[in-house]
Image (tube, rainbow, N blue to C red; front, side, top):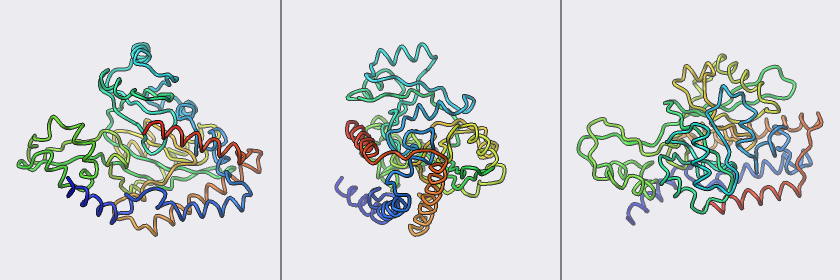
Length: 346
């Protein structure tokens, strides 16, 4: 097992997509302070999406954002207010017609924190252990294509743009007819990085030998920190795709900047806007195509700086139209709150 740790260390060291967020974002934080000085407000970005708390950067409710989206685009989703109990979950599933599997996620949280597919009451009990936040109960979508679509529009502009599409490839291994599942996991760097969790979730079939070309899905949640491969899907950006997400976005009051996390049947349905929106992220969003393996870190910074510049322009324009910035005091209180929420779930 020590050998696995050494191999994982070098995998992370040589691929910046695995570096700690604080390290990758150090230059971005410096650019934030520069833009904040120009705006004379540290939390200028809170004006980027006037109808989202703090523009969607910190302490924003996922459920409140989802309620602003037309129902036709949404999976069935309800919020269960803390304290969340097994009895509340059972009653909610019965009253709203949910069936296992379902998705559990905190109402606040980023980067896939505590997002899980839950398949039974036993798993529900385990999930709720020490859970101290409002919970979203969401329909699990059996749709094969998952993507993130980044959209922005300057206030007053007739039409926005799609600046990034990330296609998510769920963590999996492919059988060769000889190796066990454990051997296949340990032979694939992206899967090996998840070994600590995978050896528990797949403990009953680690000795199973998948057939030749048999694909074994290891993780149902499409988050980078769960081993999902983020692939650059910018080739999917067409005029029709832009028009589709422009039409969706204009139905969301006070939304100008952020990323739609969606599922659908195919890239063709994505282009037509025939999607289900699992989440809409505001100012905290990333143009996630930059995490494509092999994507240049220098190019990634160019993309990130461009998007922060756009967010700055949107925020300034909204502020001139009367949208207030979150105050320094309130902003730090909200940051502290978000930090506390994350720490409670560790």
